[in-house]
Image (cartoon, rainbow, N blue to C red; front, side, top):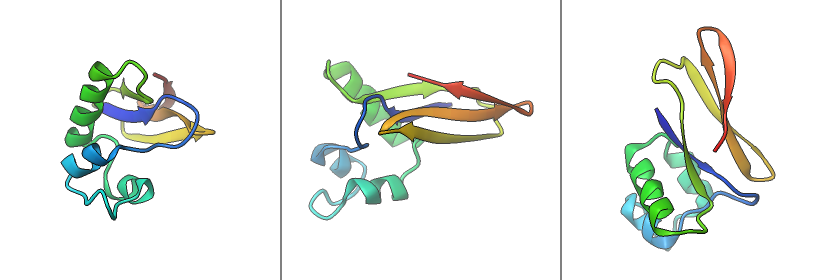
Length: 97
């Protein structure tokens, strides 16, 4: 499973074009609303972030992969720099960009 994370200190945010491509109104959608309304493993978000990573040398985004059979996962951050913790066979693992 692929999960989009922020790979730099500071907040998670998408530019107006990305917000529009995800189906939100860029004039009224905030980064907070995006994070509340779309999952980090959403295929549309993964596609947009992957495209941004390939097109932009200085992108703050990263995609981490965790096993598809992970039973639970969560994005954690320290001052905006994110990583994923997940559970597999009763053990907690960390996935970093």
